[in-house]
Amino acid sequence: MNYFIILNKCAGGGKARLLWPKIQQQLAAAGVSYKTFVTQYDGHATSLAQQLLGQLTDNQPAVIIAAGGDGTLHEALLGCKQYYSTNPSDHQVPLAFLPIGSGNDFARALNIPLHWRAALDQILNCTQAISVNVGRYVNLGTHDNGYFSNNFGIGFDATVVHDANQSPLKNSRYFGKFSYWVSVVNALRSFQGFKAHVKIPGQQERTFANTFLLTTTNLPYFGGGIKIVPTASAYENQLDVVIVEKPNLIQLFLFVSMIFLKKHLRLRFIHHYVGQQLFVSTEADRYGQIDGEELGAQTYQLKFETDQYPFWIR
Image (cartoon, rainbow, N blue to C red; front, side, top):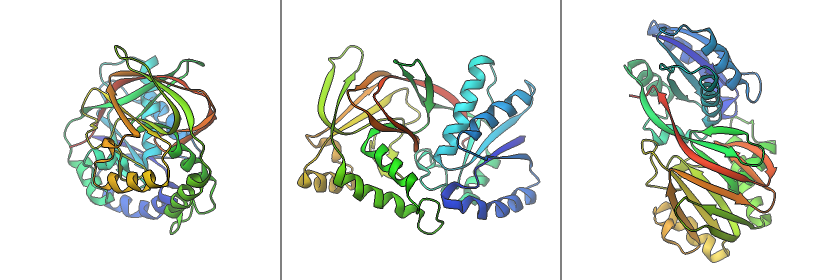
């Protein structure tokens, strides 16, 4: 097997840079054939995936390993899907994930070990790819489209991602994870609710006048281990959407308490729907995020649907 590693050395606040020599030693000890492509800027993993796929022959046994966090995996998946959309093939090169980032929610959901050594062993001992459900979205205003392995969020979570990315703590190896908690506190104090609409084909459209958080997810987890939809699964051909109406202080404490008990979806101000296709729109500019990568502030008109891609997971 030939392994092509797309490496984000900045993942995990620079933790990936320190781990990489150890990973190389492990690969050498296993006698593995591999090539490494190091990302240099945001979005680089997408173009790297496209470039290396264009260099492979049809019958060449290969696996692309996204080594970094959920954002690195997101970019690699996007590159693969974009390549095959213009170069159709019966054989798609599978993706593997080596979780050396901060959140690693995809790894949690797919039972990939969170320690790099065990995760690498699992990749090297895998013998065949399995099909995993991913999300696809279409911006109905601009007709742009894309994919997500984890979730597409609008509102509070995306505001936290935006603020954390601007924080001087973000790239600190020791304090990087605290940038999110500082941003959570700041967002709770200043966040304003917004009007949103959700439509699932065959069902009545639902309107929420004071939306706090709206996330369309393919996995149980978001935000680095928070189980937002305990029943969600990347092996099922469906997407889950969760809408949280802006809570008051008592409701906020109730939400936080219940989420750890995995019973938060029973709360009156939280709404959960499931479908293979759904439509989401907002009436005001709000921050958005895809797999932890920020989109900036905009007004959304989105269609979500399911798609699939092969992953190298044992």
